[in-house]
Image 1 (cartoon, one colour):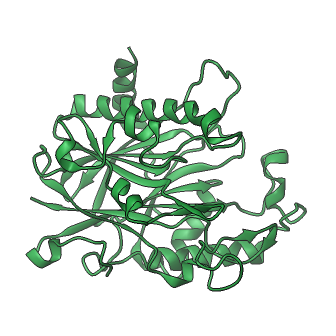
Image 2 (tube, rainbow, N blue to C red; image 1 turned 90 degrees about the vertical axis):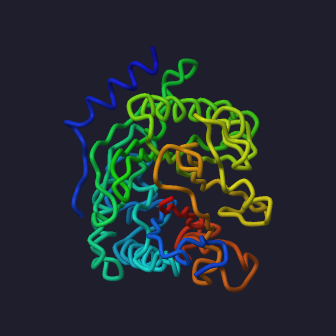
Length: 354
């Protein structure tokens, strides 16, 4: 029944799609073979709020009167920082930047419109996909894409219903269906429930979110058996946690993935010491991009996985000194505005043709 409802939702969403105009050693080998490479990235923008309080007490801290004294100067400084960071998400194989960039912790479509118009990336003509979620803090997920590389066809948004918590409100999961290099792909952008209250006591919420992502993916491949599926986002879990490894069933090794299954390239990245978020001195890799069997060499899509990257090689994204040297250079630290970028590092995968 769930799959049937999701399938109908995906089909019905065509009429309501919201597509708004608006060289690192970890990367791939495709350029050496002369193949076109498509980058698919994700970036948690860390509380990209405007200065207007329109969500009551949940939004008050990001207003001029709130505890963060969030004014126009700080807002436009963050927009400039993030646009510069996005402009540097390039590799030798993708000099024009990613084809698509999933984002999270954005307040509304206005902040994304300001972001894509910022000087450092205005020339890229990035388009926006956005949807207002029911999240209590008022933060959403979204997608930026290069229309020269990706064609947006359909957008559906999926509410995470928790029967045991009828008042629970979190980010909707956004499924963007389109053509990447002419091939069908479904991109499911996520920001799963936080670890507030403790990792173990809150894990069941992320497991429910993982089940929803898997149902969306299964519905899409039922419609299009050759479709590549990309599940991305700040999952608030590591690749080895139950939500990713068991509920999604995303494997560490490609040769362990069966038809209909998923591969998580960031599991090995974490084992190799790469992280995207740091907590109490320990690196986590919450910002993951997981792909289905179709995007592996034996899959049905002509697009194939060709490498992954954590952008830990951009010094400006990291604290250069002090107690938190080497940590992501965030906007606030200890309640003090530092004028940084985000408390998360961007991640990216690469796809090319077989």
